[in-house]
Image (cartoon, rainbow over all chains, first blue to last red; front, side, top):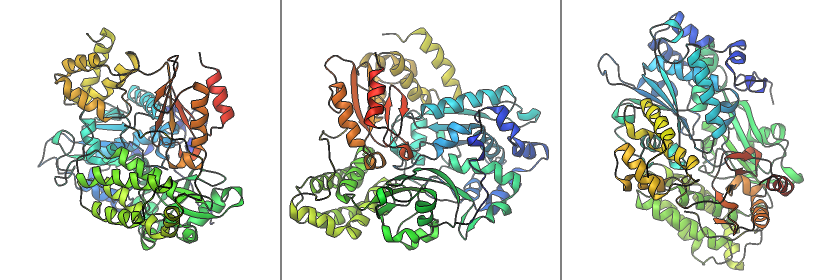
Length: 437
Length: 156
C-alpha cells in the first residue's frame, strides 16, 4: 500500500485530545477564524465544498456541497433554519463516528459552526444515539468549553455571527439514523420517516429548512476550508475523494477504525491494515459498508473500496464498515441475525417492510435451526423483491432486501443444503430465546 | 405523581434549546428513567404528559417506540449484551451464555434476587472491539468470559 497523509485521526491519539487547549494547540479553530476574520462569504465556502467533491460519510454518499446549496436563500426565505448532525451511528459494523466524538469533539464543533455560517443557520442539533453516553458527555463538555471561550453562542469570535450548538439524545432506534426519522425523533415523536418530497432543505425540523449531515462529513469541513477544495479533491479516486474512516470488524486479526485514502483495495485493508484473516483461515464473505450492503465473496477482496468500484461488484460503500467472515462461518446464521435486526428496527409504517422483515427473519431462523422448507430460498427471493427497491417511505426495506438477495444469489447452495439436511452443518453454538420487543 | 422539583428545573432549561417544547420529551424520558427507578412507569408518563401538554397516550406512544426506554422495572444492574453480527462473529453467544449463567438470569429476564437484568441488544457501535456488553450505561469491550467474571464479581 502506498504511503499517504493522515489528517482525520491525527489529534485523536494526543493526550487530553478532547480539550480546547489541545485542540487549539494543534491548529484547531483556525478554519473558523479564516472564515470569520478574512472573511469568507457563505457562497465562497459552499463553492469550496463543491470543489472538494466531499461525499456524505453516513452511507448514502450524497455530495455535501450540493446538499448545502439546496438550502433556500435567506433573503427570499427568512424562516429559521437548522443543521441536524446525524450521530445516530447504528448500522451494524459501524463504529467510526464514535472515535471522532470521544477523541476530537472540537473538530466536529468547528465543522458545525462553519456549516452554520455557510448555510446561515440559527442552531445546530447533534443527535447522538442514546447508548453513546461517552460521546454525548464528551461533546457536551466540549460545547460548554467552546461557549465559555466565545466560540459557540452569541457573537462568535467577537463577530456578528451567532450560532447555538445543542446536544440531543436518541433512545436506541436504528430508524432515527434515517434523516426524516431523525427529524421526527428530534421533535419528540416516534421516529417514523416522512415521505419525500418535501425534502428537508424546504421542510425539515419543525417545517423549517434543514440540512442533515453525518458526523464524519462535518468533521471534514474545517480541513477543506483551511486547505482548499482542490487539495481535498486531489486525494482519492474519480468519484470518491479524500480520506475516509474504515471500521473493520469480524474475523480479522486487528479489528479497528482506520483512516485511509480512497483507492486502496479491500484486500490491502484486510491483509496490511487489519493483520489478515484470523486463525490462518480464508475469507468466505464480507460486507463492504455495514449490513445493508450486498454481501461479497472472499475472492472479491481485490476490489477498490470506493463508491464506483463497489457498484460494479453489485454492492456499495455504505458507511465503509467492513464486516469480515472466515470460511467456517454459517451464512444461514449470519443472515438470521441480520434479518432479525431489520425486523426489530422496522418502524412499522409500510406493510412491505413491517411484514417483509418479519417473514425474512422467520425464514432465515428456520433455515438456520434445521426447519427450512424446500421452497424457502425461492420465497426469500420473492419476498425481498416485493419489498424493494423504492416501494416504501424510507430505505429500511431496501436495507433488509439487499443483503438477502445477495445471500440468496451467492450462498444459495449453502442455504439449500441446510434445508436438505434439516440442519446447518456450519451452525455455531446458540442460546435460544424469544425475539426482542 | 408530581415530577421532582430538580427534574422540573432541568426540563425548564432543556426546553429552551428548541423552538417547540415537545422536542424535549425524549431527553426528559431519559432523565426520568435515570432518576425514577430505571424505568418509565405509567405515573411518570402521566407526569411528563402534564409537563409537556400532551395526552398520556402520546407519551406512551413515544416511550414504547424506543428500545432504550423500559416499561417494566429492571433489576439493580442492567447488562445489555450485544447480539448483532460483529459481536456474534467474535463470540457474543458465549458471552450471553456466560452472563446468564453467572447472574442466574435468562435473556430478557431478571434474576430471582432482583439484582440483574440481562437484555440482548442490537448493534451498539462497538464492532471493532467486539464482543461487548453495556453494564449500567458503561461499555465494556473486547470481552472474554474472564473479563465478565471480573466485572460481575465487583458488583454489590
